[in-house]
Length: 185
Image (cartoon, rainbow, N blue to C red; front, side):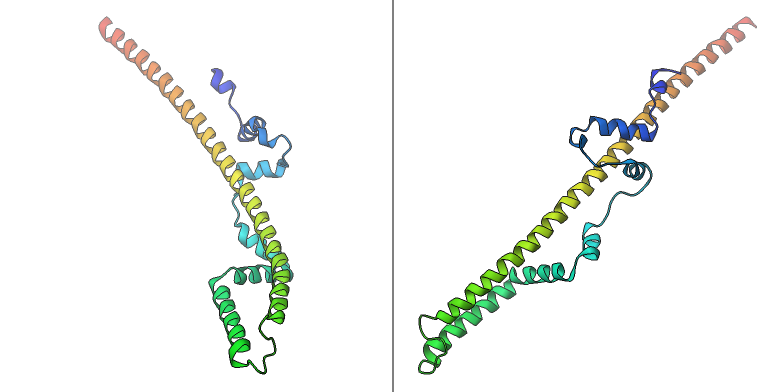
């Protein structure tokens, strides 16, 4: 056996060696089960599916409200409501307006809308940020598994090249012996 064969890593040892070199994992929570998955299993996950299954009704509602609140449908419909409110109270219902010109009630409605909408959007952003963290962690595991596979393939190629060189030397030696035997005849 040569040095490379002596330094051959099992896949588990290879994973552990790569993890030791990774400075970001010094305080990581990659455990034995994760190492097993890196070696044998599928580490990629669809974060959106997993998150949707675990989300509460309030979280799903917050996501939908934030999605609608950040859409062109909301912006255009909100502008239409504002224009109708202002034109209706300033001109159409000028004598019987329920919210005359300084539009104090409109100001109250807009303030309440902003007060409710801001925390809902923040909740949705926090959930999106958590999804992003999970996606980054998942991407890291996929990259790590790819690195393990590439390292393993690289090692196997090195072994094959060494075996090829040894086989070539053996063939050359056999050919020389055949030549010597033919020359002795």
